[in-house]
Image 1 (cartoon, helix red, strand yellow):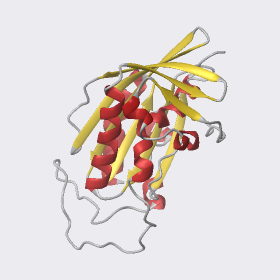
Image 2: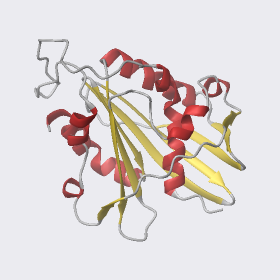
Image 3: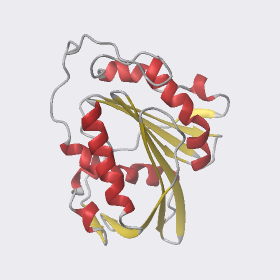
Image 4: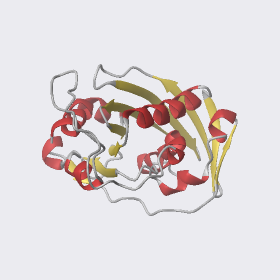
Length: 228
């Protein structure tokens, strides 16, 4: 079995399982705040959580990324049972929601790109909006759980994948930041995915994929999330 970056991106949902329990409210139609706070760079923050439609407008596009990037189709949702072995902290968060490939915050948007036709270099961007406290607690809890287990296994259907996690630095963007390198090994093949999350006000930006692509476009993704 060849472990492609696409497979790794789909499984990266394991790193954010806890967010499924962080927000169950439906999208409000009006803002609940009349103030207009600002980011550290002086740009205005939204006064309340953004809708999924608003988040979609803030995703990176092929025009933002430049030549050589094309949209990658979203993988089909699978419903295999997912089990985490060797990482109690992560297993306690639950494995079933990993098969959805998406967080359970109601306000969300996602896009994936492939760089250079025929290559395995891919990048996925996810945007979520909720209160700053919910976003921070959710993503922080999961990163802490994953980084508490340098190695563990994920069993998805009949596939056993050896996982490795290592904390890495994130640039000083937004209000809070988390970053890690995920190593996936199965069938004699391996793949390394960088996952960096930036909270900027009430928006959470997550880039996952080839480390070089994530590093190259993280600042652009945060700027777009703030100011589209």
